Picture 1 (cartoon, rainbow, N blue to C red):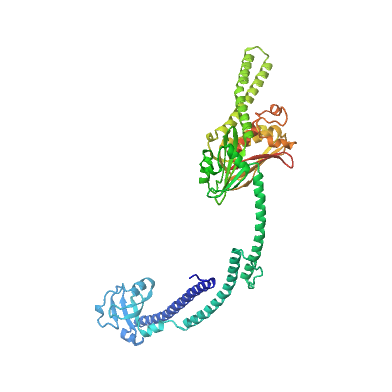
Picture 2: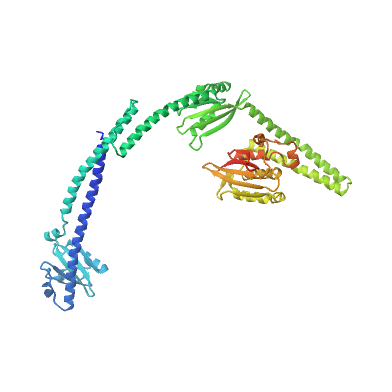
Length: 565
């Protein structure tokens, strides 16, 4: 039978108070017994001291016994454990070794001791008390009979008082349980009515106590909840309308992979991919999606990949929610992918074509070396050819690095990189360029900020941002690097300068494109390969982050990016 809340509450209080009462009784009884035992032991100690004083006056044990109560047993024991007097045993020579008696053994250590036990000599139970003196042990024993047991027995008055008090408390507990049970019953009736969607009277007569306040609040919140449910339904309709009109193909799946709803664009993209919506999870095109959904965790609940079909490219994204339901988003990225491939091909072609000017420069230098020219002119030509060679070599290196990041990211080794140490190394490497333009470089980053990544790529992020500032931001400025936030997955950084910034903000979104120039000749006039910021973006993406650029309110340019921990 299921107990009501009132009955369970009464039983809980009853059990707790019963345990408490029993504990109090046991404690009081034991303490009173201990107190009475100590009183009796103190009396026996006085008898022992009296015996020792009489023995010091050379009185005989028989004379001493006249000074003690009639029922006292007196035993004298030497240090070897031999009994040389006992008023109960006539022939003490028959008594065995007494050093192992509990009270004697304890008296050897502590000076005195007592024990209640059965005598081995006459099989009678005694309360023994023994005390060690310089030449012997004096032991007195009180027969542990009904009279002594009665004396040591605790007084029952307190027991009766506690039991009466216990009965009174039971009535109080019953009253409290009744009062609380009434409030809980009203709350239960209210919840059941709300659950069955019946009409609920919001003017419920709750009692004027804390539970009554809780009940009133629940009723009020229920009314608000109903109102919010209507609002949520309206918002859901708006969201569904947005999904249907979205420029991305969207489909939501339940935990069991059943389709909840989708928009028309999702079906359209599936038709291009030659996949039926009912066969998504058996089609090879979605093999990676199925594998991710089956192995996703709370920390890794997002997956993205690209697929192609019939000359079109699609971005396919999967997000798994906490309840294991998930969504699949398909987006047509054909245009973007073709542009990317075109730029990638262009970069490869440029790298290939660079070999010809490098060969020409070498031939030019050979000609200069073989002809008779004035030393000043010869040196001027050699330096120009050498500088061009350095620029071309830097360009080839940068293009190769970008291609490697895009096509062979797995070839980069990962290690624990301390950002503070990396910035110290960077500042030392760029000491001369920074001094020539009077640029100060400071940072505010916690010493424990360590990134698991590729050290060379992390170095290239800060190196290329600093080079960009040195070349384009002007002189007599400052560079500030700071870590402005962190969470369980990322560290967030800001790289800002106080230079000239970029006046036309539409350029900001294109700064990371390869060879993009704000003005013609910018790269040529200031040096550099024109790929520095593109390398920065790809290195940040390699470390699972993103980067944006913006003008600072006080002047200058600021880059905000995050790196995976």
